[in-house]
Image (cartoon, rainbow, N blue to C red; front, side, top):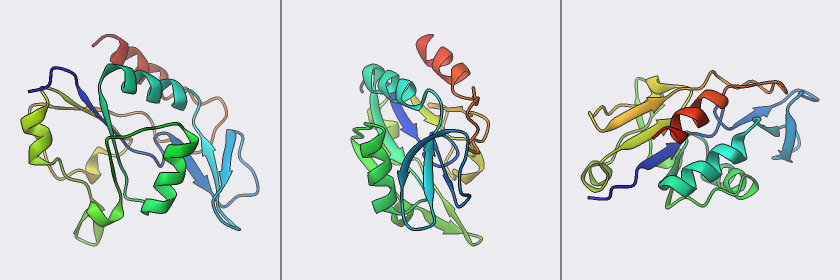
Length: 154
């Protein structure tokens, strides 16, 4: 059993925001395609760095893998695992994320940082959700401040 925690990071609306608008006030990260621009949330890199220093990191998103890989590269996330839409279960027409049994067996604590805990099917006493407010591309967003503070206190 590993004493360091496992951090599971969501991407969309947690660390980044993909927008079809001409511009948003948050810092531009990259142009995904002709229409979609991706913006990073304030303190996203600080959160990623903190999680990577304190434990193992997995990225789990309902987005497509190629898109997720680009975001990981741009935000310098080096996950031990990258799970995307293909690894999600479809339930009632929606993509759902699941906690793997091996994570429960390997880690004493699993911290999920996701603005939408309702996309998770599994529940376990080892799992703690840290839920920032949904990020929608605002420059002055402070949604990750509290999350960073909580992680620093672990």
